[in-house]
Image 1 (tube, rainbow, N blue to C red):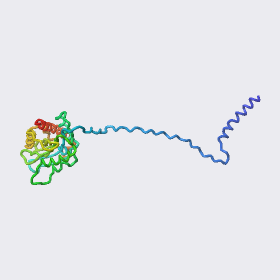
Image 2 (cartoon, helix red, strand yellow):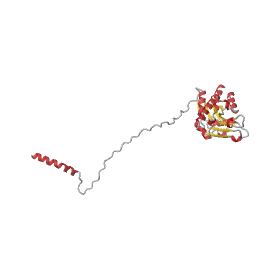
Image 3 (tube, rainbow, N blue to C red):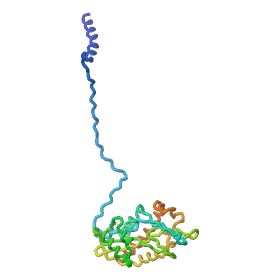
Image 4 (tube, rainbow, N blue to C red):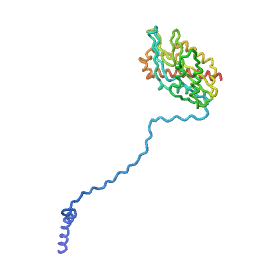
Length: 280
């Protein structure tokens, strides 16, 4: 009985003892204890690769056999030639997004398989002295172009340079010219037609002396044909009346004009380059 009574007394004292340990002494202010919070470990994730990022083009290397300089793909002419002078309009719009200069390089590469071809870049406006020279009584186109080419190729060191520039061809039966690459609406009403034109000249320069190679007769013939405006005889030049842009600015966004222009230009380029290669 004594043991049972002692055990009961001991158990009855436990809650009181535990509660007493949780109380502060009289007159003492106890500051609340803030539990320490462990800082999360920040892991630096590896930078994600940008999807769709444009990869740098491979650097040009090796001896340059042919350097290609194309100055024909910057502008597109939207032109109207009416029955009278009051129906004539001409506006040129920028078409850098069409990448026509890259097309020129691609066609030269295709025609010269196994030859190292390099695209020669040049600063914007480099051809302005050639396309818009100061007024002179006499002008020598070849000398002016040679000066531009020498400046552009100062550090290129290619064996030859194929240089492509636009020219203005005369429209048959009129005193109007068709400058470079563009689209033409000629005539009025049922007596009208819509056509593309691509007028350019190729000159081949020696990489050391910068002498200009003799122009092949086939290339000269193509230039003369363009000068007489034989647009209707080439299926690649024909367009529907609805293809003529409502405004010059609309021409840039027209996939029909872009794709047909690229096809026409590629065909003309292949003929022009082949004519030069054939006479070598």
